[in-house]
Length: 369
Image (cartoon, rainbow, N blue to C red; front, side, top):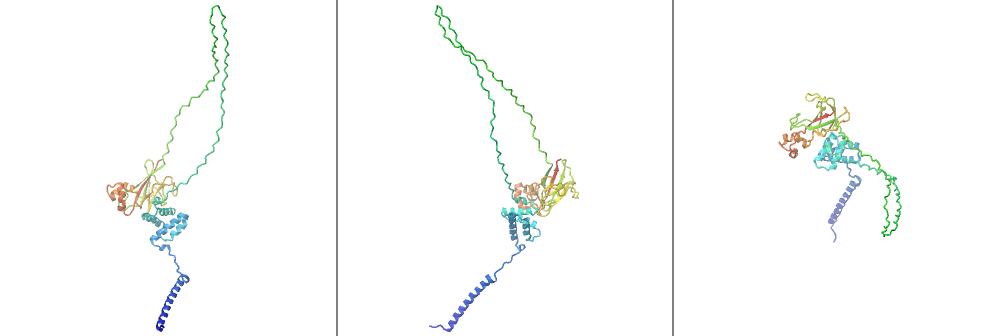
């Protein structure tokens, strides 16, 4: 049976359509894979979403922990084009801590922030504890073998023993008298020369041992406390971001012209320079901004080193420890009256004693000489 011309034409058209589709697919693959492959254009770091910028910051800190190249890490962070790189890094540490980020990531960020000079008293809590280096154990010192010391030994003296003598028997008489048998007469050996005992010195009498001297009192001492509501302009809603310092002598009199240094902000202040009737001649103040806080020491002079130990860390923006908030009266005045330290720890996250997170501290340095 022969196909009609119409059926033959339809079959040819179907074959042509299929061939055209196959040719189109092949041509498209050729163009897409060989002739005009897809090229990817790098996106600028500054155009990343905020969460991706945070991930980028964590990766930069991890890389710095491996190679220790601070300049490279700073250049990488500069690509974020944030207004203040140090402040952004400080805020990133707080975000990671609040989001339950891995401790290793937070420690790497804290180390990078510290080396970049970020002013954040909270960094101390995130920095890894230093591991002491092992010390070399000295080899045992060889000891010489003991030497034999000759000692004088007294030889025994020979004692002469006399030879016993025979006693003559008595002459016989008419009467028979029993003749006594000869007996040995016991003789006593003459005394020998016995050496006199050597003179021994009497043992020395105990002497009065002087008591060990007491360690000298430190030349300087310090105390610090959080200023509570109702003092120095502090209340439950607002306050000052500052640390007020007073320097006194052993009698409690204020001392002017003493330089004080803050290791976090790098500030130097000298007592008596405030110029306010509310401050005495031996007082100075350190003012801070967002994320601020300090740890102070008495300095040799402007730009000089410390002559005392540093005080404790005193945050003025972040919440101080609960024990300080309770002791200064924030918990009772601003959260719940009559609350204990444990109760204060429970309610602090909800009440926040100062909405603006502005705190003040008072420090007293006392000269003990």
